[in-house]
Length: 344
Image (tube, rainbow, N blue to C red; front, side, top):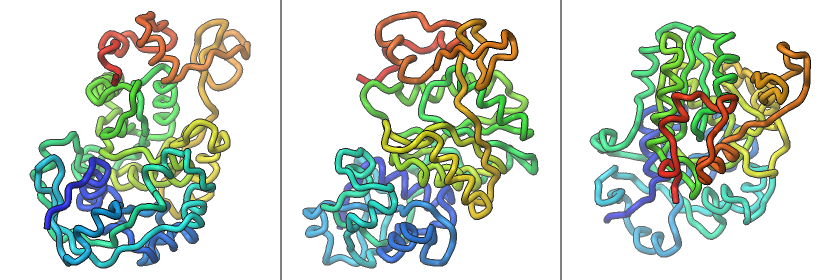
């Protein structure tokens, strides 16, 4: 029996099999969803913050429910063979526990966990590793070899780097010998920068300090789950060999669903269980007076007049063919982006 999957499930299969989601080794069972939601624990009592789930629509369930094993395809490419253990559904109270609320308007709840879907408790019994050559995937074991035994801080992003990001890079390097710049690729919304722009610009940011910086990608998709997803991102970077991880103002959040710095607070709370040092900081900004990037009273002019720089503002300038000021973005990065870099 054949089942076609979307890119989200493809990325989860790849990350399970390639060790990106350690200690997770299979898609979550119903008991594991409950345990992670309530206790941050997998079925085998390991710390983890979010279930890794395999959704199927009701019509797909009818198609495959009488089979023990099925073949998984993505865009006519054979990806894996899975063994089905059981089907289950996820109740609203568990979604509320994971996200901190239940609102169907939230894109993470709408797309990641949907009460109308069924979910597969299943194991991957065969994985076609040839698919790795067709996606921009970086093997965590190979990145670990580049890091060697040095301290390394991980930086997660879904954006083209502006000067605020470069400030965060430099902040992280104060604590570590290496910096892993790792944009999340695989899923994009209308109006966001495309994958090519995201990869090329973050590679340039890596080259700005090539002796200390390493480039990789995180092939996944945003769940907009705020604090719990920030923990997941930290665990992923630990699996890539990082000893430290940078958590921002609204890490993995969406609009105003989470409080400012909520992700930092939860990551610090579980820092020991995550097993990686969490680096937190106040949001950087451009000093309106002297155009220096800082996150406190400007040392250059002793002023506290702020211009906040964000990916949203950068994209608006690009969309309307307006020049991005030098104090917003490095010229080398600015030179390779334009309206064609945005998804229509």
